[in-house]
Image (spheres, rainbow, N blue to C red):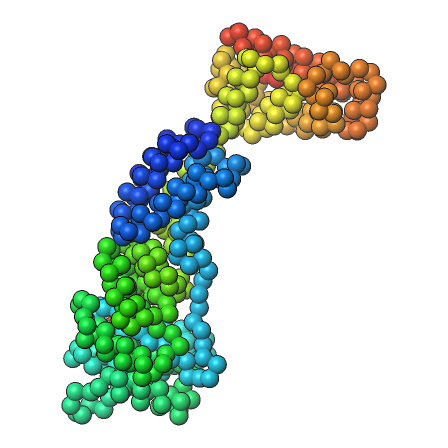
Amino acid sequence: LSDRLAETLANLRTKGKLTASDVDGTVREIRRALLEADVALPVVKDFTAHVRERALGDEVNRALNPAQQVVQIVNDELIRILGGQVRRIEFAKQPPTVIMLAGLQGAGKTTLAGKLAKQLRADRHAPLLVAADLQRPNAVQQLQVVGEQADTHVFAPEPGNGVGDPVRVAKDAVKFARDKQYDVVIIDTAGRLGVDAELMKQASNIRKATNPDEVLFVIDAMIGQDAVATAKAFQEGVDFTGVVLSKLDGDARGGAALSVAQVTGKPIMFASTGEGLDDFEVFHPDRMASRILDMGDILTLIEQAQRAFDEDEARRVAEKLATEAFTLDDFLQQMQQLRKAGNLKKMMGMLPGMGQMKEALDNFDEREIARTEAIIQSMTPAERQNPKLLNGSRRARIARGCGRTVTDVNELVKRFDQAAKMMKTVARGGTPQIPGMGPV
Ligand code: GDP
Ligand code: MG
């Protein structure tokens, strides 16, 4: 995602304001990038339409440059769709809290059951694992292995009773938990390879029989474009209260997260990040947004964009100098720009004839700038616009205002005059001096 987006943003970074065509170009690239991250097409369409609307709207933050604005809007929107806040398990007022897991075969339900049990035990709960997947031959045994790892009891049908009924097992388990003072019941259910009417019916029946406080839909982050259809099928067939994204340790960019969250409107609660029982974390929408945007790169871009913004500012000042009167406000602004050492070099590159001045800049006195700033800030706006107003009594007032002497003020005005003269030279294409530093 980030490469292409990086290119687009790089193209934006020298512009001062977002135009409709900038936004359209960027939105087109974001659309392509999201598709590459495996976000489902209808979700991408919705998302980009919203970003476009916001980018063109009035609410744009004028303090940010265009690249930052677009990144901020995209990031905000991603977080919003991903649920905004972290959502944790809601425990029943009357224990036991019943948590049912649903999802396709191989999604990671049984593994998640173990992860939840282990975490709950660490949090001083008394969980009970329930083997309600009686479909696959080894499913019960797999849960028993996981239960052992999580040091958690597993409720399973008695072996040798013929084919068990998962609805019955789940129901008995909740009763067992209540009797034996387990406070959380985690029901592992069967999945199929694909969405299947019988599977949905079974899951739905388990839900009805046990009335869970949470139904967690587990989905493999690598599922890509199928995420939407699968999530919709489970929402219609069983319905759920939250989503768990598994296998986020793979190279999936997390597009499935966006698809599922957008299409179902349900919060993503946990992320599974490996086969081990500790590879499990609470889902953070902002971190996932960063992952989808690959924020590492984006932050670099923002920095680049910020630098470009400063260059723009320097260029703007230079252009103003060529056409308009140079005021003390401009002088102050230049001081402030000069303060950033990086910018100094940028400005030198920008202004003609400054190539040989590097050495002088190395000897540059920071405190000089602070003094200059204090003096100019004691002037009225009118005085800054028109330094000719600065007669003796005004200079005395300014000196008092900033705690300097009249000589200091006179000195500054002299240097300003030199700078103004220099700026005229620049405008005519000659070799200038650096403002505020005296002749070099
Ligand atoms: P179920 O059919 O939904 O119960 O899925 P399982 O829990 O049996 O998991 C299927 C496979 O995926 C197993 O080999 C798990 O070890 C593996 N698995 C589950 N969760 C994760 C995960 O977060 N990351 C990785 N890499 N593998 C996982
Ligand atoms: Mg399983």
